[in-house]
Amino acid sequence: MGGGVGSRFWPFSRENKPKQFLDFFGTGRSLIQQTFDRFNQIIPTQNIFVATNEMYAELIKEQIPELSDSQILLEPTRRNTAPCIAYASYHIKAINPNANIVVTPADHLILQEHHFLKNIQTGLNFVCKFPTLLTMGVNPNRPETGYGYIQTVEGGTNDNIQEVKAFTEKPNQELANIFFESGDFFWNSGIFIWNVNTIIDAFVKYLPDIATRFNLGLGKYNTPEEKTFIEEQYPMCQNISIDYGIMEKADNVHMLVADFGWSDLGTWGSLHDLAEKDQQHNTSLKCKSMFIESSNNLVALPEGKLAVIQGLEDYIVVATDDILLICQKSEEQRIKHFVTDINMKYGDEFI
Image 1 (tube, one colour):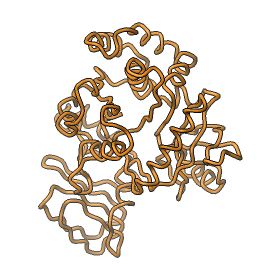
Image 2 (image 1 turned 90 degrees about the horizontal axis):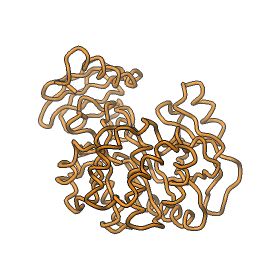
Image 3 (image 1 turned 60 degrees about the vertical axis):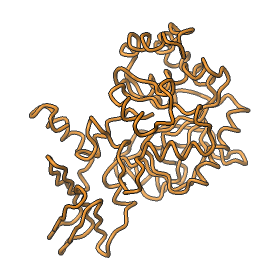
Image 4 (image 1 turned 45 degrees about the horizontal axis):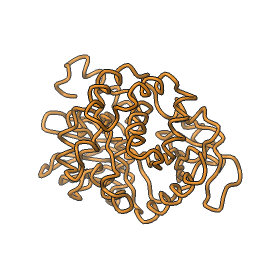
């Protein structure tokens, strides 16, 4: 899934080039390129599909030239993750009626790829045998308010796969502390594994309006008629997430307890946690910096720029050619609201 706007990483992440297409760590590969490289180790190139907004078609072709046009599934409008996953599932089923599928966001950071791929293989083996909706949960190492959580039923298989009791939206700090201390809540990674028939059956049962609409296209997927059908029908799909629409309601959901150094890189704060820091826990990305009487800050400027920071503590300072953002780290969840307000005041010039 590579169609998000990444507004919480504004102003680096802009609508015309959101965060999945950016190289945050100077590795020479963007987040979506790293995701492709990672899965290409165990999945043949021809079996990898990117679902994205049609405005990013050329960016996908530029960054992942290995993909053919038929592997880039273009959404004419944003309708959240459930319609995105439905579209990909119906397209893949037309190619392989019994395919097992991994669904992953394009912008996650995986620090321990060997362990990650081993977990993916375990999950694929499990859904080969059982008609289950499998999600990957991450052991939390702090009471984080920026992630959703999964609560599991005690006990599990030898592969550390547990039955899911409940999904919980992003909690406040008090609830996050309780979740962390309880030991039976896990971060929701947003990575799913299932058989194509299991997920389509779930759409029929829990999101029948979406299933009915995509069923109208049977016989058109993976043909020249698919594009016109999607352009007509996709905008009429309900705007709903896969978590809320299916995972929270289904009775055949399991979770694989995963441990592979995961971050969804959802916020500047999560990037600060992962980046190399000085003795005062300051970090700078792609730029030179001098910190004076300052601590626990993140500074990101265009390459070659110098930042001199005095007397700041727990701040995010981000600059592009036309925007400067200075925001308290504790308030960074408001950045996407700032973007909305800027759009209303100045139009989309700075979005």
